[in-house]
Length: 79
Image (cartoon, rainbow, N blue to C red; front, top):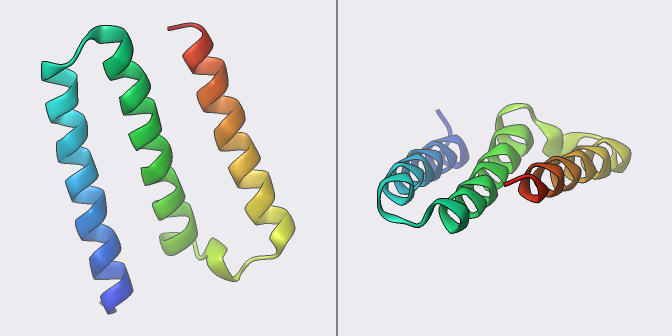
């Protein structure tokens, strides 16, 4: 594996552990919002590094980021 993929995998594991800790020790509403934001960061890491969206056209990058913002905003409204 390349260094970039190894670093990304390490960051994803760290974010997953952080999500687990937050889910156990934080208030429900604040914790849910923080977990959604962490999930969004993980989504960006996976899509840009493992799905090779870094090399894609700007349209696809903007589209995936708009989807992420729309999804997190919609879910956060109902928490």
